[in-house]
Image 1 (cartoon, rainbow, N blue to C red):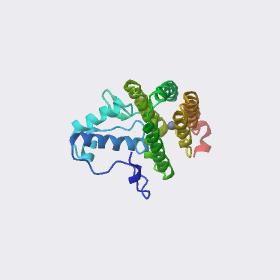
Image 2: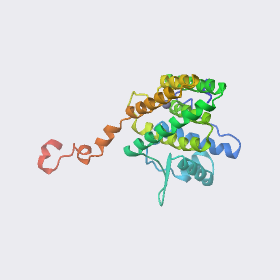
Image 3: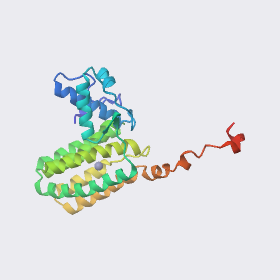
Image 4: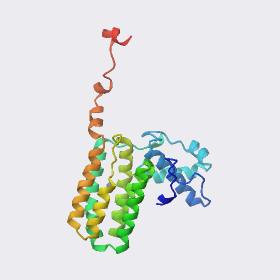
Length: 255
Ligand SMILES: [Zn+2]
């Protein structure tokens, strides 16, 4: 990630450049990044319909290109393609969010085990540089970049483990976590703490697998605890949602 090029006067400066690149493949990636960032920044709410023709006009490409991008976003679980309805921004239930964190605890502790055995000296320096960029984005209130970079730290760690199947599995889980953060984040709370990330790196650097795993387990539990999941569970009660509604018997209160 190229955090050095951030312009601090603009809080969407982390978004990929607004001019499309020249080659076809990179145009798709650019549109993918634009839509993903809009979802992370809650400019596109869960269940919003993503019409191919409208998006094609906005980005100046054919529906075929948009369809390919939406397929890719769907593969990463950020978009759902529903029969007869087309693509919509995905949303996660509270149970799905809890499952994602449980799966991450299992997979990431396994990744740490492998990373401690296979790491090279440069891996640790690269991880530190990534978390420094994440910290800059957080301090600059660059929410989209921060959520993305905090996920990339976890993926870079899985990359050091040197197992593509594990990395691919984690990539889908990190995408779903980003979606969960955008959907359930408690205002004013940061889901991933850079201090935790640095503590995990230090333990890996020292070759202390057990303490790196303990830090990771604690870190993921804290990320989950910072999401407003209990509140959402209460919110599914229809009587709570419609508690302001008065029936004909107490008209005086509503008129
Ligand atoms: Zn984290």
